[in-house]
Image (cartoon, rainbow, N blue to C red; front, side, top):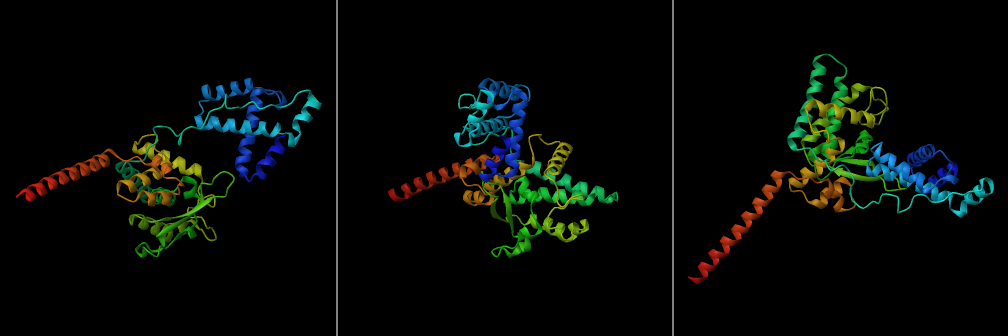
Length: 346
């Protein structure tokens, strides 16, 4: 049954990683229930979901992921086209039923379900993070440690993720050839744009591509130094990856998370700040600096403006400045109208 369901998922063009992950989730449920699919009941599902929430403290999105997997498997096993119901009934005297319905499953009713505390870096926090990352390079280099090259790479990765608003996997999968010129901004040289080839995909679709234009000159300097001076020291002949590892062709997502957590703790930053917060900061700071919201939306690859708004967390200072400008404009208009009225009376 699992093999047939796996084949169905691949036929639907789902990613192999998605298919295998859902299979593991169904196996986990079967182990918890202790009975085979033709004996499953809604009670088994309710008990497992309650255990995931109360004991394992799964998030809402994680819980719904498990429910989607079990529900999908039940839909497959009860579909008459695959004849599993008839086979189970003749062999075991019972047949599979759908045990996950709208009654006992979490509904997706919010645009975003991330933790409420998730937010962008403030400009001060971001500067502290980058300063600490640069300090690690200088410290290890002064000590004669080879690790200074990896520290330089990690610092450049963080700066790149912020400079282009890229997701973690998008950043990790960048190749040298993904950086290129922008004819409309020749001052950025060979780093006027970055071509994202591993963007977040829609369900059963290939990775979404987009091109992100460079907006901050300061990001070019770090990239130029990395690609011309430091990256060649890794012995990267024939390796297309922008961020090579000492033991692998490219750095892993786990390493990026580990390094971010270590730097964040060392600087004393809020634990809710993570790699994705760099992307949130990119959106927020562009909006604060007056960039057109539509341009920002295209840069980060959001199909809908409402999604971009979720990433935006403008600072209190920005809101105060915006309010001040609006009030000053109102006062100026009022004074101008009064002056015009007096001149007309005379």
